[in-house]
Length: 246
Image 1 (tube, rainbow, N blue to C red):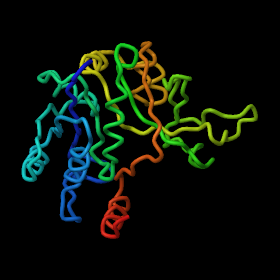
Image 2 (image 1 turned 30 degrees about the vertical axis):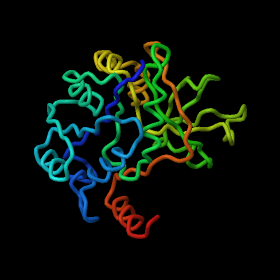
Image 3 (image 1 turned 60 degrees about the vertical axis):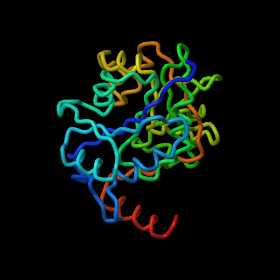
Image 4 (image 1 turned 180 degrees about the vertical axis):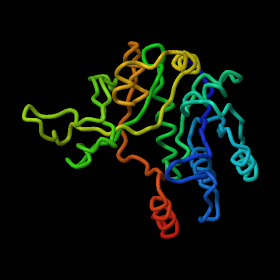
């Protein structure tokens, strides 16, 4: 794919169980979605950044700071379906799916995941970071990934994998999944047409749908995962880090 064009799409919705109107929080002087958009816009190799939303208030906020917003259907089950709707009307060959609640995302990570897409062998890519403690390894909220020798994903799980023969933490061998994805446009559209897989439904991990259909996912290793904003406390701490320059 020579001279390929790459788009980063940030799905953003107004509703949130733990933190309603999350994208529009602006105690820092900027909307939360603006922080994400600005970080992604700094990534090398990204030609276009778009926010995909089903809420006019979010679209208006994005346009107020000079961003591009696209209105999408309110009926999508997930962000992947939302970005697929956007891509049906666009022709960029690589698509990066960026979480809208990670205002500290590393622009280098965005560039890295886009560069990992290498069709036809790896039409999809994601990232992982080392897990450095057993408590995190055992936490079902931390998704784990096991890799093959080529850096392809063998499996993702909420369970503690891999484990030693005694079932204990295998220091240096455990990686936590970072929820940043890139796809070829064609595979993204194909992926959203696939029915949910059995393991996907058991683990509630959408990426397993690709593995269950024999599609390889390339995984790049980064040092740290970005910190997402899920609760008011998360947002407060983000503000403190921002003000403190940390």
